[in-house]
Length: 428
Image (cartoon, rainbow, N blue to C red):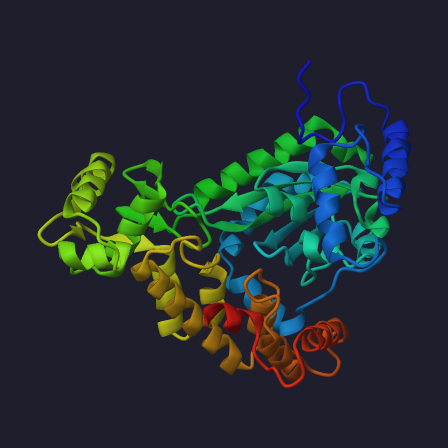
């Protein structure tokens, strides 16, 4: 029988025995031994990621934002539009007095945690509260954090949690994506007792996410094409209901043409793709011919350009910045533009967007925006941002201590008198 790797318990498993088996494996893992074949690979992989980032298996995830800042952040988040639907579909689970349902953003920050007051009170003891960070980097192995990390719905049962404080709980979660662009928006989770290790709980969460995604596009807005290229080695093009994952060169071509709506002559496009290398014109023409077979009339020539409106994720970031919406820009920024591309034109676009966004973060004085950048893979070693964040936080902020520790660690990483950040060195 093929076992579903995303389910916590196989048919016929005894939850109590399973809990003991995994606890023994967890203890062995913390002592330096391999976890053994009795633990699912999705869990052991997550334990390894957690151990690499967390100094101890017994801790409280940080609460990063609360009060008015949290309310404003929730109101502006795309998942706020489908919260009534989530409540309708998962409300019975959360109302039974034993479970909670939660929604987090793409960074693992909890936006809503709802359910019986007594269960919420118990969950507060492990900082499972709105505004807390429950991605793996801050909370270890857990259903919403691991679902975000692996991009798939998953259950985490009891002692499968890396953090010992969370091991009395079980949970099931699924990531939520924008159906037009594929952008990760967050995750939906149900948390409670051992009953949530049953297959039905994972099926319920997945069905809820599918229903929510179906309601996410703005009413009356049907873009002709959407190009997603941030944080991706290969861009995704959604056009006429089709989702096309493009090869690297085609990703670069469409990104360059989307960034130059008036079009590029063959020589300009060749220089943007190949730089100073001597590449015969027939090479570019062959690439464009293959691309045209994929996208049809979207691609025009003389000059090379895209026909019609093409919405892009990097364009959304630029538009939000232009409108003064820094938090919206950060939500839309899923990472560097085609990060592994070495095409000169793409490198320039990538550098300009990152520099503009980072400069806005450094000058904003907004702790939420600074924290968002500092906690991202591209900002986690950015000393200047961590120091600005520490200066912007009120003395009473709950995360001030952990931010001070991280800023100190980064300062000690650099040679004396060296104020450059890792990100700046990489850009040099």
